[in-house]
Image (tube, rainbow, N blue to C red; front, side):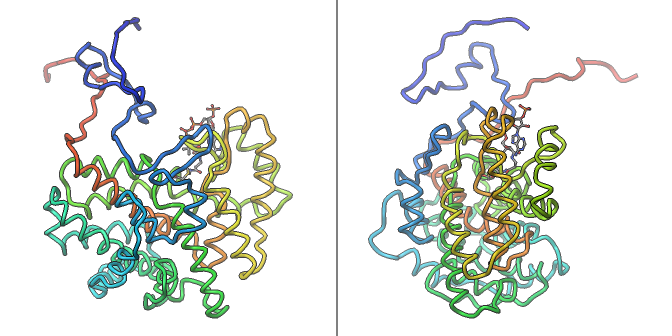
Length: 403
Ligand code: CMC
């Protein structure tokens, strides 16, 4: 170890140009990219210490209360509030090759994880749209935004239905989420009738809004990194969805429900917390790379859970989740590490009440996040960029001759 002092110019955002470090003979070793910005973005703002999230400047609480998912998608994509519902019309009117999607989905054995189907489905859709390879063509990207959203609705719903071993349904309804619920067919709880399905659709719309974008997480970083090789948007979506699949990222909602089910009763909560503190297990749905405060999305989701359970009936897992939260918010282990519930802590309870299997949860996240991924892809392609090519610190053998 040696100390080296360098002088470097920072801009008004506190950022310096990384290549200047290299020019001065030093590298930043930053495997999780904790302090390395890979984008200048105008889409989403987060202040993790204060628990603030804004889409294009608008607070998430206002957006979730007043806007439906496709209005939010239009805002995120175009940068300003839209006066009409043009995006909704374009998504609902888009030509989707349902049979092609069904052929891909049905090629997977029943019970296959729906995220695996979704990832493969994005690749297959890419093969159907070779024109998406013209990545620098802004007009093409604009035209494809509603098409990809319409295809993703169909693909996600069919993947979920395939995993559940039920028939998918006909997308129908006045919002993206209501159509999605219908397209899932028997994979959602249809036994409570149209009114309940309406409530589920409204709840899902809010959940979709909350998941639509979250700046540079692992999935979005993957989308940009893959896109930086001038890869088409569908192939880039495969990589973004694969990153999201992991249990530390979008897969956490599924992990939360499995954890709550494993805990099983209020009597076992204290023991589970002790195991967490011994680092034997994680408290899924807690902690966040950026939020060192309550995740503002988790606050909104609590209200959604109440609305869904009012229709679906009480869920004993909710009481376990609430007890975990109560203990964790008082316990030194969590307080000192600034671990608070994140977006995934309560979302699974709402999804489960709607009737979705835990394996479907990450698909729901991915369907919503496709908006953010496409917006970041568009932002990347609209500006100057170079292929992402991180440096490494080589720690292997020096040059040697074969014996
Ligand atoms: N349960 C128990 N301990 C935790 C947890 C947790 N959920 N999260 C962090 N810690 C501990 C961690 O072990 C470390 O302890 P120590 O200082 O003793 O080594 C300390 O807190 C700091 O954690 P970290 O690993 O440096 O935090 P990170 O910013 O690298 O990780 C995280 C963020 C989200 C990966 C992590 O909090 C985690 O694994 N949470 C559980 C999975 C989860 O809920 N993920 C969903 C994230 S939100 C949805 C999304 O956007 O994907």
